[in-house]
Image (cartoon, rainbow, N blue to C red; front, side, top):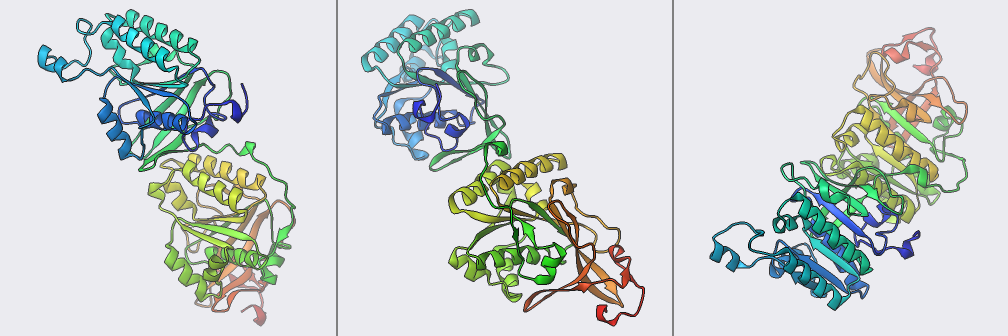
Length: 487
């Protein structure tokens, strides 16, 4: 089956996209993971989606009482009043009479009685959706692993004959793996939890392709939201590959017209060189054309950015009020790359954002909890997606050296860039000054000289080419003549 209209929605924001629309009707799926990974909450979503669709849904609970299930569901925002239950959880008498702490024991609970209870309830209800949580409790009804697998397979065959879509969970632990039940499922959702994040992947899904990769998710008071791994090749949008001006003629001259739409630019330089202000200047000019931009601040507070921009004649508060600029202050330690990519997609696809600026790369790297290679792969995927959508991308990259040996980028991302604009501090006559130049431009020629850069209360000012200085990239240039106009 293909097409979203032929699928059974999981009810989870983002997961249906990963599954190409949802579950295939009439098949059985396994959500597996260690305790605390969120499997049961996935089931709450699945059942609630069925109730909202006026379907008959059945919750077979093997571990918690109905009262506990409903209370736990309510704690994360779910009302299960429309859900039918088949509770096969032993009550307190099992413990008081036998003095046993085993939930199920083969000599106390007969497998045949269990099977009969399920068959009777399903035939009575004829449910569209069934959620069994957790199926691994059936081990306690079986004498050995062979009998357990035989019983689970028989249950799966019976459920398949009922034309219901089934989701069941397993409690997989290092001491009790669930490899022996994965084979019965038509699809598998692997849930994992680390100190930093939660992920879900789909290693198996019969009858359809799915999005590969590890997709992160969050559990909030409103349930689960999945953030799919960004697949840039799946997105494309027609656009005009024109130059966009910075509104500063001398800067446009350096770039032979400006930055092209659908390109990635890196603004590189040490702290205080003017990288963020230069990038914001392009967004100021875009706002004058009625276009929307967004800046993601990974290394600076929103308040500081607003104050600093207003001080150099870039009216960011007015731009925000008009809807031509969004300012997002990011906490990289509370963010995953997949979540950030979803935020960017929402800006581009729902708000028609034309310029995306990430300030800066080091802060973004903190969100990855990985190495430089991981950073480059993530930035490559994000940049390629934005280019495919015709968005102008600006990455702000801070290098460590204020002066000295020239370094174009800090983390080796230069190959990702269509354009590299670098800013430097130089010392001339005992005075610290700024210069700006272009190192790379794929889509057109560019000026190969450096120009003095000043950031004043009136905005950015770019001077004439510095043709009378040598050794500018060392930070301590020398005059080759007495051209006073360049001093």
